Image 1 (cartoon, rainbow, N blue to C red):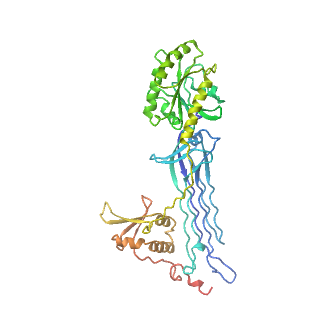
Image 2: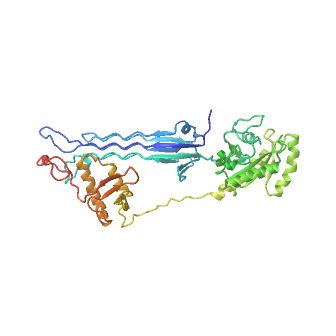
Length: 457
């Protein structure tokens, strides 16, 4: 049964905003006392937050789809709809969030670090909020915006100071257990660990974490075996320790050749050239291991690589190895320590920025010009409009005209009856443009947003 997952796809669906309410207050002797429709509630967000008690992405493997509640619609008597509850998803420390296109969205390191994957839609305004001296009786309300929907890739990169790398059965898990209080699975037969094991080590005043990286074999960086699945756990480490089995029973294995193979895989993966290296010549408690370690150590020192003869069973040499690693971890922390000073960044909008743009294109089938309006506000206003309500459509036309969309369409060559598209993609709204749009309604209505029945009320 799967117990460790470090790469999953999350499908996040934020909540939709609630619709605004169209309502008219009624009082004794005053049946039309003015609008009193409440606003809709905001949809819930989908948020990822680092939780130190979570160590795997297994929960998202079993349940990749997450939805936040919708906002409640507004009601009469100025009652606003309730907001949808935000959904907070706990993730392990070191989770990297990327889009399906490979764009880095967030690197979540440190307890409490969070990232909003999908934002809930805004609630629509009720007709009470839309009322004004010129629009005393709005016969419409705004619709709630749909919540965002995103598919993101979650990758866990272990936050460890030291990575133990080496061939399967070299004794990496045994070293983690001997150096720390971790209890990884250890067996007396050849097998490879299926999950990275982390342990906390104390050496003097330095406390650091150590992790073994399982599954490295020739061709791991190209996807052979399990190595590629776990190489990402090396990226955050500041020190690499090669664990070499000096008492291997495999006749084709040779310590320096093993080191060269693992180094070749690390180089092929990339980004690890600046990490300091140490070598742990393991299993010197065995006679053959001692002889091989004595032969290999001088050769490694000729290469400039510090080597330590250790035994995870008898604990020989572990103290020297631990303090050597601690010195390098301390040096890395001092070299990378950055004093963060808060900085205020001001990004004023351009004076001539209208907040939208009009693009002219041609219909591929007829060759007729098509004018596409793109911009945050026009697209949001279209999503909030109830096109079954003529007065709401007229209100949209007023907003677009005040924003300058009609003027820009005229400058772009649009004429009455031209095809205008607001928004990108297939979800855009298409209509035949008329420079002036009268808001329809019953015969009792006057100008848009007024009602003769309220005169003298």
